[in-house]
Length: 296
Image (cartoon, rainbow, N blue to C red; front, side, top):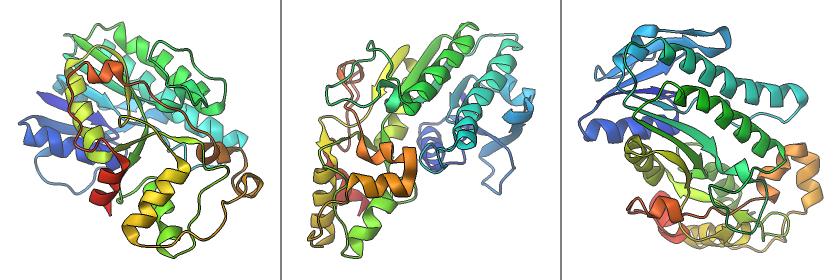
């Protein structure tokens, strides 16, 4: 197939691109700035905030994967920061929906990313049928998914939304920030340390997105089982052969440093993976120990 990835030049997009090319597909990226890449990746310009997209990219594609949106962990959760995070997601989906509507034939597949934060903070495994939470992450995910349904109205043969957990990679994202103080010998757990940490290895995340081109519905996407912040910290320290002698970082310190964004590290949830596992997907990294051993 011709697979177009909105946000393809990012960490996850590049890994998905690698998997798709290995599978024999043609890959294109929607990007704000054309980058120097190999000839086997087509690149098309778009600017969602200006409602601009190269229609030839949409017409070329058999399938579209949307990963576009500002990182919820990188931008301060000020009023303007929250607006930027939400608008980056909404604008991207609206531009895609309008362009897909203009096609003369339906898409074969559409896969859109959402966040596991959809459910809010919880220590009880959440199924796809459970309602959304009420915090900022949940509100963003709910509004994001609502926009996706405008694409579903164009009736692609396959339409899937993936509620994605924290993607672990040493090439970017959250893990390098978690590893750094532990590598320096000053690591410790955060808050109570009991808050769930919902994660998935980059390789599994990418492979699941390519599999999802044949799926329909909403799917939780994370590694099996559940761990908490303290267990994650201990596994990393063990792999690096570093001691953990400092007390946990108090919650109030994190709230002072990060403001409302401290919720990202002080709260968490657990995904019920029954629906994902019923697809027959086989994880390469089922445990945090195997993932950290591979990544470090």
